[in-house]
Image 1 (spheres, rainbow, N blue to C red):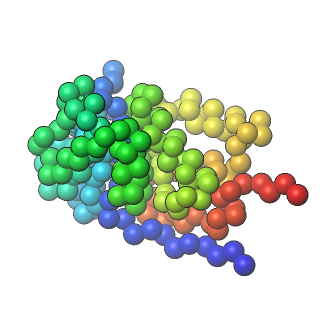
Image 2: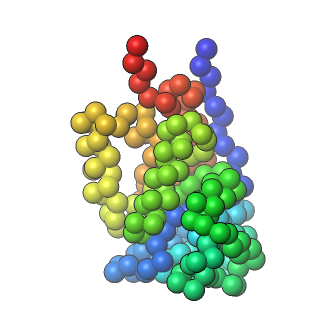
Length: 202
């Protein structure tokens, strides 16, 4: 008999986001708001370890408000992404794969802020692991200024066209407000593993 899992305990949240600031001031403001919110809630931030872009703003805000910040960055990106040496824990790893794996292992949930290919690649790998039942951790998108509108439309289109299960689409919690997103992630309780694996063809 399938059993529903209890809502997760949040000690750490991993945030995927860009090393650019973007063209709208709302992106930086949202990153700083989320960083402060995590610190105020006593939730540790796990992120990609850079000091630039909204990634750096996120980490700075969390650190400035007393939050614990762990950055994880590959050796090859230490200079390119301007590794953040002002945070309590900066972990240098050998590869991108190790970076994502360690970020996932340390975290109790995941959030995507605006970013580019690297942001989407990291976040969608986490979604894939959730779809396959490798983890049961909640994941959400902070849809700042409608940045992810077209991505969300694409995911809904994939459901309509039969390439994405509705159950898997519903694994992605979407909000435009950081506090609302965090509250929904705290209450998220995925179903049993078979449900997450999608259709079974007999």
